[in-house]
Amino acid sequence: MVRARAAYSLHDLHPDAGDFLEDVRTGLSQPRKSLPPKYFYDAQGCALFEAICELPEYYLTRAETGLMQSHVGDIARRLGPACALIEYGSGSGRKTRILLAAASPAAYVPIDIARAQLDATAAEIAREFPGLRVVAVCADYMRPFSLPDLEGLGARRRVVYFPGSTIGNLTPAEAATFLTRARGQVKAGGGMLIGVDLRKDASRLHAAYNDARGVTAAFNLNLLARINRELGAGFDLAAFRHRAFYDEALGRIEMHLESTKAQSVTIGGRVLHFREGETIHTENSYKYSIRDFQELARAAGLSPVTCWTDAEQLFGVHYLIVPE
Ligand code: AVJ
Image (tube, rainbow, N blue to C red; front, side, top):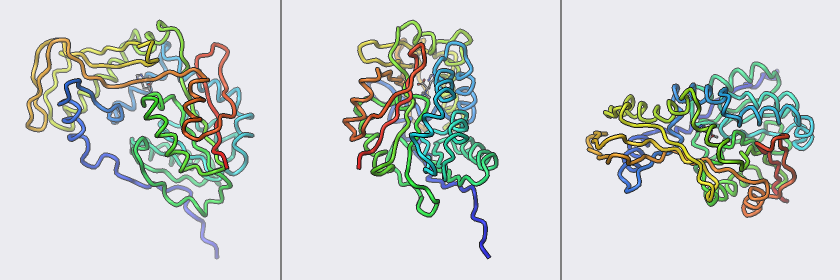
């Protein structure tokens, strides 16, 4: 008798084991204070990010989802039948469902740092797509990590899906290193589908990261609230304000939390001082022209194939292959 193989499994690589306090203390002890953006995504941060995606000013999600809907037939042909689809930063999986329905992969490997959301979404997708093997991996995929064994899933080739312009959180040099590592996970003959926000006028970008309802501000400030909740720190959230601006020369949005007065905060027994106007740099969000991103991909040993864009040229979905 052949026993049915489990359609869904979760591999926990424990991305958060003991690092949070250490990373916070290190980041806030530098002359220019900073915090890693991966810590935005606790349960409240995930919910706030979902709310950002619905904002009228935050065009990224709508533009990318629209692109996926318009070009999914074309994209599915590029991926080919029965691939293993490996997704970095699977989040709520809304765009992924469009792809799964059209491309019929043999296996889906969602990878995310937010364990609860990953588990809920991946299990749900396994129910929605009978016959699809779902191998969820909880990991900080921006750092080196090992994929579980994907042999025996019946996949013909591997394709990485990295939507949302999350690659924009990395500097171009870091992105090249990241893509080189991802290339190793995909292997020769595989592909990569990467969503990248395009360069555009500063006012449009400014509005997307300074929304009128203050959801982005709440998302940014939640990082301090999370430090209070999980590390017992004493941040006064009313004494910090959200700042986001576009640096045209670097082609990136920078998000900061600005101390509105001179103050001290105790974290894990260490007293940290903030000057009035001093900021904590919480995120970079790089924007790339199609050409610049293709050049970056080439530097990482990938071959650009095509890039789908919307009529307004807001967003790009790149397809690249790993040469044999
Ligand atoms: C999920 C990293 C792509 O940079 O636009 C949204 C996060 N920050 N609003 C982005 C974010 C502020 C988002 N990424």
